[in-house]
Length: 308
Ligand code: ASP
Image 1 (cartoon, helix red, strand yellow):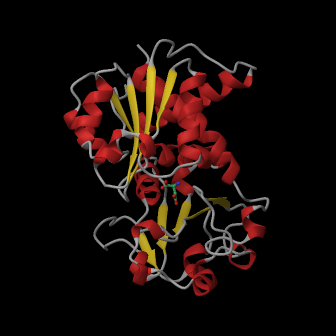
Image 2: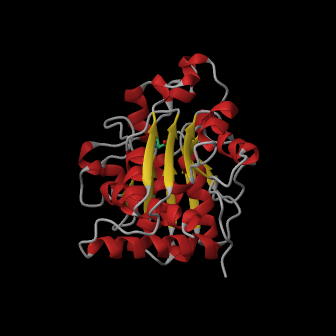
């Protein structure tokens, strides 16, 4: 028995069964598409709106593909030419869009909590899907990361996962921890310079370290994160060459991890800053699998929220 979802704004506190159900559903979507079917009809007659207030390559495209592959109509709201640039509030934008009878709004915003605000203020039956809010949550990324790990290492209770980089400003790190904790991962380690680690009490279950050589030792999964420059003051920005020396994943460091360590990154990659070319393009890299899984996970989520 899993909880029925109307919206997806975070993975925090979702039961393991719900997360596993969404991952299973993503695999079913993948299998359905693998048989040559490019388009299913689960969401025929439904309309999904992409409302992105921050840049996106993978997430926006894959939500669009996911919705189309399920037979839904998709509208991409172009912020640059919309009335938000004329001073319209987010709520007026929401109610205007709702009046057009949308079934789902997929929203990305730089302010933490925006998707939950939309849930609280929506006047129709629209479903809200969080495509990343500030440094708060990126639930579909958490799911696709969990799916990518599960495809290689379903034995979560044996796994050590090291997440390295700008954790403090990362919504990906937060959603990954929520998913991986629910799935019973043995150990999660955060690594980064002191100023980019979260407050000590935010994730009591996670070990924090400033020493990447120690944090990667024996890891089964390494998730590398980009410096979220857009969420930092200029004075907080580390020197990139020094950062790579201490926190970049290069072949020498990867050799300290478990032999089969999966290398993951949500993208966009900043090569030579958090990851070396040889590792990003090497045999242990799962980066493009993550991208592929993103479409199936988003199909699963839209299917779950919208299918009648
Ligand atoms: N694409 C991810 C996000 O939107 C990671 C990143 O931008 O660094 O959070």
